[in-house]
Image 1 (cartoon, rainbow, N blue to C red):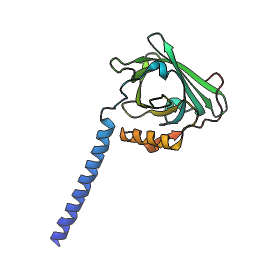
Image 2: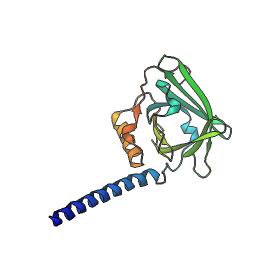
Image 3: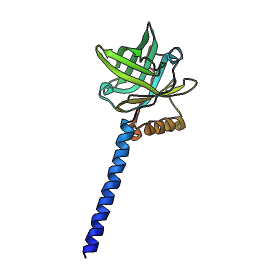
Image 4: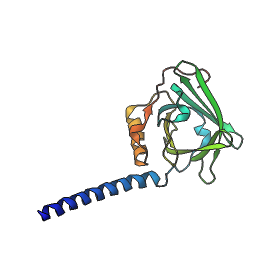
Length: 187
């Protein structure tokens, strides 16, 4: 009988150890340095980007559909205009400015919509033709899949979500953004 009790205790310990190692591995991935693309040509990046999917966040909670971001040159930085359609059909818009993080070759930006607050905007995957992009930030709380067109094929979206997962984001938490009607003044 004593042998069975020891065996049960040993199994419990092994199970707890396996769970701890698994959780440590998840925590390590989420806290590991976040890799970005090597460089970004911000002139090519400029223009409209349609939000295809995102990790839900408080600052976009009023957006129901048709989210689009426009990037352009702004002296020593990048101008940013985010627009979306609320559930009641009205359009919300916010303007900001992004600055390039030194030494990042354009792959890491800091965006500010309300001075003095800034947020990281890191380019994690970018189509060589600048047709789609995966953007996130090092704490892995925020991420977006953007496209030059209002739709994206399932294969590309799946690949980008798999890339996000490999980088430590919860790919199952992404929600799709409906793109039903273009907001006037974009494109």
